[in-house]
Structures are given as C-alpha cells and as structure tokens.
Image (cartoon, rainbow, N blue to C red; front, side, top):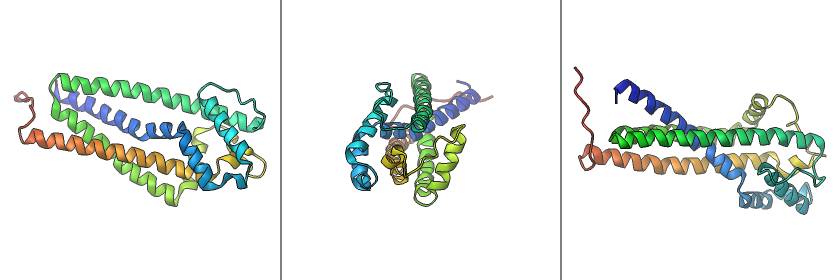
Length: 225
C-alpha cells in the first residue's frame, strides 16, 4: 500500500473511530433506563413533579425515541412534543451516522490486517484512543465548570427554533429532566468513553511494544528509491 494512501486512510479511520468513541456512549446512556431510575432518586424529582408522572414521562420519551410511542399520554404539552420531535430527529441522524462510521472503520481496519499492516493498524487505534481521552478530559472539565454555557450554545447550534427553552414552573419535561440530569448524563457518557479509550489505548500500545520487540509479525515496508 502506497505510504501517502495509507496515511490518508489511517487518518480517516482515526477520525471515524474518535467520533464513534465520543458519541456512542451518549446514545447508550440515553437508552439506559437504569440510569434514569438512579438519577430520579438522586435528584428527588418528586419535589418538582409526582414520581409516578416522572416515570411515565421517562417511559414515554424512551418509547418515542424507539418509535414505539406517539406521546399520547397527555403529560406533555404541544411545545414539549415539538421539541422532542426535533430531539428524536437528531438522535436518529446521530445513530445512523455512527452505524456508518463503525462499518467504514471496520473495513479500514480489516484492510490493514489483511495486508499485514499491523503497526499501522495499532497506531490508528492508539491515535484515536489518545485523541478521545484528551477530548473526554476536556468534556469532563466543561461539565464541572462551564456546562450551562456549552449546553445553551449546543442547543442554539443544533436547533433552528427556541422550543428547547422550557418553563421549569409549568413544563413537565424540564421538571422531569432538570439541568443537573444532563450534567450527570454527560459525565456518565464521558466516563464510559474514557474507560473504553484507556483500555483500547493500553491494548494497542502493548501490541506496538510486542511488534517493536519482534514478537508479532511486522510487515517489511519496501525500500523507497
């Protein structure tokens, strides 16, 4: 494989794996019902809304994102439903994008393995995981000290309307999912991503160590004239 082409393909793989490692934990956390249960207990949501209603809204929202509900319980007003429609569209777009990136990344990694470019394969994983670790550390710091500003900026950038600006006094959606919920949501997803990245980096670095020690077959690159 030509060196320039190999570098380009490796760069794309690093980028795609990085995006997957960052975004996938958010999707996993978003559909983790146990996380919602723990958060409701931690945040005492029953102080703002009846716990039974909060549980129903949680189940309804999750079912809606899965395409199993049309938000017909009457617990959410029209503005909240319209905002959730925007969120669902974003979730679906993100989910399908991640599927595509995973497939492309696997194809690239399989090509590296099949052509015996083991070192390039491991370096790609190392760079992707290292970039993810640095990004997650940044996200964790932001979650602790500047979450509100970033949260607002994200919504302004992502949504073309102001439907996401809800009233904590009368809108059940924000009563059920207060700002601290999203802070904890981000921290949990970041920790999952960070853990996976550290494990991946450790394994890839160990593989590179073995290659450098000559314990794993290393493809000899042709001499450049």
